[in-house]
Amino acid sequence: MQGQTKEQLLDALSGKSEAIFEKGLKDLKANKDVVCFDECKLDYDRITKLVDVIPSNSSVKEISFNNCDMSKGETAYLLANIASFDKLESLSFKGNDVGLEASEALGVYVCKTQSLKKLDVSSNKMPPPAVINIFHGVSESNLEEINMDDNPASDENVSDFVRLISNI
Image (cartoon, rainbow, N blue to C red; front, side):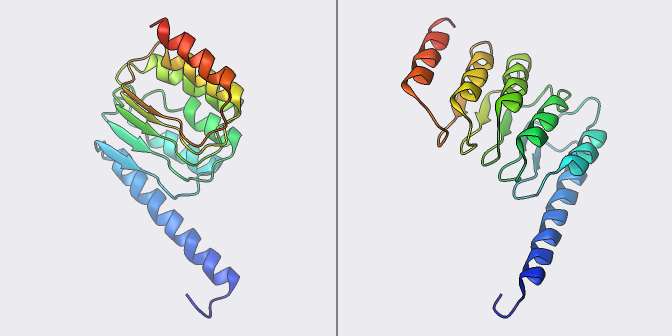
């Protein structure tokens, strides 16, 4: 992409993001098993559009929102509005910004969605209390696999997690 201005590069990336988003919406409307929004900038407007097209009896089994450049508030908003994915088996939120509010919503979602078997929340810059919120949801879930790599951790987090898991 030699010779392009910064504005041209940003326009190209914006167009790519829009194409990814539109394909994800199309797959969601068609009730496909796997829906991907990876590398798509998700802001409040797009999340609202996404939530509006979720089929009431969604049969989506796997959905990913990896590297969507969502803020803590946008992540929390999305998580609070995807409850109708009650058949979901795999949820990936890798590379976003999951803060306390979003982690609480995620912990509740993981606990309530008994079909969920796999969760990836790696590389989310989660502070230790956010990690704990997710652990609480995990302790009451049917998860078989969870990836929380590349998030801040402490000995206290590990101790709390071991205590929670031992109560299962």
